Structure formats: C-alpha cells, structure tokens
Length: 373
Ligand SMILES: NC(=O)c1ccc[n+]([C@@H]2O[C@H](COP(=O)([O-])OP(=O)(O)OC[C@H]3O[C@@H](n4cnc5c(N)ncnc54)[C@H](OP(=O)(O)O)[C@@H]3O)[C@@H](O)[C@H]2O)c1
Image: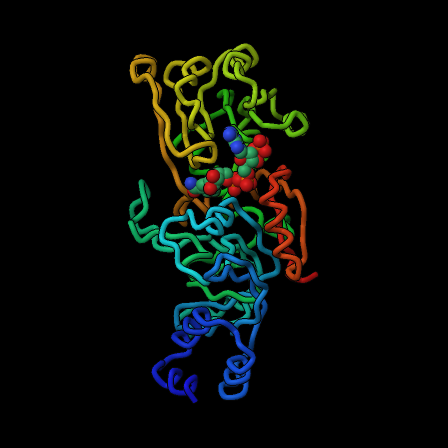
C-alpha cells in the first residue's frame, strides 16, 4: 500500500519511469509495477547509487510528442563510463542507464515527428542542448548516459533532432562505434586543428577510441600521422593502419624521439597533455595547435609560457561537437567509406564484462555491445 500511495503522486508515465530508476528493485515492487500498470520492461545496464553495475529489468520508455523510440541494435563504450563509475564526472546523478553511443531502428514516433522515420536505421547524435552557437555549447550541454538514460539498453527515447540516418555501408556495430569518439576527433581535428592535406599530426594514446577515430579521419585527409602509446604492439598496429611512426610515451625522452622521427608536428590530437605539456615545444612546429579533449594522464600541469607564445603555439580545448558537426562527420565518413576500429564485441547480456575489458585498457579501438546476440 505504501508503494501504491507513492505512485499516486505522479501524473505521467515519465515521472513513474524516473521514480523507478531511483528505487531498488524489490520483488514486491516489480510485482506492483508489472501487475498494476502493465509496464513493458527491458534490459539495461544500470549504474546504481552504490556505483555497482547491474543488468536490470527497467520499464520501456514512453515517448512524448517530439520524441522517437529506438530499438537499439548496438551500443559502444567510452572512457567516460569509467569516469562516471569512479564518481569523477561532473553532475553525478545515480542510478542511471549508462552509454552514449548507439545505433538502431526507429520503432515509434511521437505525434509531432515525421512518420517517415518509422523503420529507419539510425545513428544517435549522443548529446543534448548544444544550442545555436557553433563555436561553443550552452551550459546545459550534456552527453547521453548520465544524467539522462543512456544507450546500453534495449530501447531509448530521444528527440527527433538527435537522429541521423545510418549509412548502409556500416553495420549496426560499426555505426554504434562512431558517435562520441568520432564526433570528438572530427571537431578537434577539422574545426580546431584546421587539418589539411600533408599536415603533420600527432595522436596521443593511440589505443583510445577517440585516438583511433582521429587516425582514420587524418588519413582520409592525407595528413602525415604520428602516434604515442604505452604499447609497442599498438604503435605497430597504428603503422599498419597508415600511421608514419610512433614512440612510447613511457620513454623519458619520447619528445626528442618524436622530433627526430617526424621533423616537427603541426597539430596534436591530445587525450593527455598533462603532466608533460611543458616539453611539447621540443617537437612542435611554429604555429602548431594542440587540441586537447581529455586529461587521462593528470588533471593539472605547468608550462614555461614564453616557449609557447614565442613559437605562436595554440592550446585549444574541445568536447564533443554540435549536431551540424555530427552530420558533417557522418557525411565525410560515408564519402570516404571510413569504418571505425572495433576491438571487441560483447552481447548485451555481458555488458558488465565489456566494462571490465574497457577498464583493463588493452583495447585498440572501440569495445561494442551487440544487442541482437
Ligand atoms: N572532451 C570530450 O568530448 C571527450 C570525448 C571522449 C573522450 N574524452 C576523454 O578522452 C580520454 C580518452 O577517451 P577514450 O574514450 O578515447 O579512451 P579509451 O578508449 O578508454 O582509451 C584510453 C587511452 O588513453 C591512453 N592513455 C592512458 N594514459 C595515457 C597517458 N599517460 N598519455 C597518453 N595516453 C594515455 C591509452 O593509450 P595507449 O593504450 O595507447 O597507451 C588508452 O588507450 C578520456 O580521458 C576521456 O574521458 C573526452
């Protein structure tokens, strides 16, 4: 009866859905919900309040007039999920369905949505509220999968504005491997890095998803790409993918080795500028751009300012991108038939094991989750 009273307070199905994410799933509760409201449930990877992961049965989302329901065929993991699980992501709000990357089929559309989307195969633009300024997002900008429900789930509801048609040359797994990593690498290299043919590009930590996406894009631009990694095997694999060479960032003199190898770098696509940023001038060309999208190595660093301004070096921050960036990325990938690099695929039932693999960090490229297997 206590549960029944609580539920009376909520007027809409959406409020009930939010409530369900905030309670533990006791047998009595599940019974109450399923029997009294006849909810359809679905499987989803939920990060609970105590930071443990659970493949839970939760209610299938109910769409509003401007939303669509997508049956997800595949999703993919990003380092972001690890930050969230450590409680180190801004705006923590748990429990939540994890996952920002996803591709699937539109199964329902709201009353204000173009019905032609029904049955279309789509990739999801992985964020909300960029706003109308292409130079930077609004303060409300946020990525799917905390605080909003994410993609490691059988279904997701999203606004029509987040839909992009999946190019037919990509499988669902390949499509799901693109959004966060591809969008981040695209905006970093193209808008901020001003990438053009023959530029000399350094991509740090080539095992990472964004780094791998950057390699594919930079090669399509006919840039000369150098990489760093903690692993010689990953450097060798990057060379097999078209990189011109690489050095181990674990070597103390890696910056000198890189200068000798490359002759000088114009653009850095960087997940980890700290704590070693101060040494970058040793391999950067005059007028170089360091575009950073992460702080994997350490959150803070110091630099000798004059070494940077006298060389006209720019240090630029970036995070994800706008819907327009995403559409441009997918168009470019389709034109060049670029396929994302996939390290491993897990069935949805093994999503927790997929997270364990991401944490281990042995991957080169994306870890994807197949929702059909
Ligand atoms: N700003 C944004 O919009 C945005 C978007 C996506 C990701 N990110 C951030 O970017 C980082 C990478 O994300 P991801 O999803 O691509 O990661 P990921 O697939 O989990 O891979 C992480 C990679 O970081 C590299 N790495 C670890 N320590 C390093 C160090 N000290 N120096 C250089 N590289 C190091 C490793 O490369 P090796 O294995 O080759 O050593 C590893 O493969 C994370 O911090 C993430 O939060 C930011």
